[in-house]
Amino acid sequence: MHDDLAGFRAGDPEAIRAVYRQHAGAVHTIARAMVGDPELAADVVQQTFVKAWRAAATFDEGRALAPWLYAIARRTAIDALRSERRPTQGGHGPEVDAAVTTLSFDRTWEVLEVRAAVERLPEAEREVVRLSSLLGFTHVEVAERLGVPVGTVKSRSARAHRRLAAMLGHLEEPANRLADPERTEG
Amino acid sequence: MNEPRDEDHAQREDDALPLDPAPLDPAVERLLGDLLVWDEPPPGLEDAVVAAIVAEREVARPVAGAHPPAEAGAAAANDELAARRHRGARGRSWVRPFAAGAAAAAVLVLVVAGATALGGDDDQTGGQLVALAGTELAPDASADATVVDTPLGTVVELDVRGLDPAPEGTYYQAWLREPGAAGESVSVGTFHLRGGDGEVELWGGVSPEQYPVLTVTLQQEGAGPASSGEVVLRGEATG
Image (cartoon, rainbow over the protein chains, first blue to last red):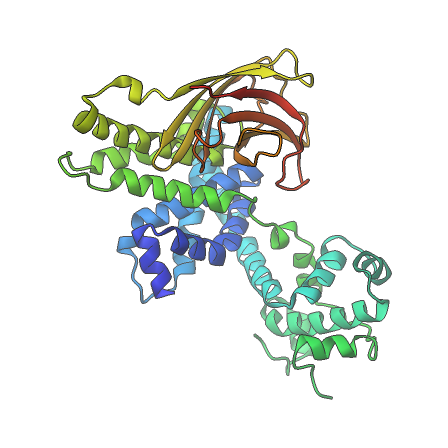
């Protein structure tokens, strides 16, 4: 990562791609969570990486890169929202900014946690979870869509749920957390 | 019971142990149903990010005999979010920062080159004019393009007239093509014109000498990166 960071600072295209591929998904999640509009979110993602490059000389290599990038993304998204809202609202009051930052923070953090956990799932399990949890398909429908037996879908789903429960125990509702005290948090 | 140690092992167990999965915690299940968990940045954004940074780096890089480039670099940095307010939000604006940066880089490079080697001949910085005509799919459309070959790639400024805004679910994509029916096409960017006619800045990584044909196609959202073949505008650099 230090090599990538050095290359990123130097503007080396391969290092920029490496940093982008590692962090763009989460940065994009932050942007979408805060600004909503896909095109504006893409602007925010691009500006985040460009601003990070401009400021890379000041970044302390002893720290994690992700939180620094996320902070830049949040500031960029807020700036984008202010810019977008100013013409239509005839000026932006402080209550608009407060609402934007306060309401989105917890949700954004939870989404990032789930996203990171999902990205750690094996691809076959991830796709089963996506089809069932996001798109609402039944196991039979998932099986038909993937061209695999229903038993395979159930097995993948069961393994994925175990992994997700272990990784995301800290997000569970308090009553469920107390009911399963031996669960390992990831 | 032993846990599966790898995917192959897990695959072999799939049909042997068709377990009903334990339900997830409702809070986790709700989050898994959030599109944001699964949404990915648009294809092409990685290239745009790399191009924007490389272009800005090139602008900021010191040039022998030239003044320190800090101001030029800062000016060319082009805060896209502010610029949107002046340009309007037409098109996929994340394509634009690089175009602006590349154009700035091109201007800097060509101005320096012109000042040092060519005596500042403006013709060297003006690019090549290409007239595009509407095809049978858009017979009332036309466009003028200025194609500037720079050390960083090709900047295309496309001034479109008479082309309908792309319908919802579609967008326009511009391409530089090699001559001939079997010539390769390389995308130079996308736009939708829902803000009306006007100028679009695009960028491509190939030379107009080798890819002199400029086309615009109508593309379907989600249909993949290949050309649809539905050409609405076409022109060729002849100089």
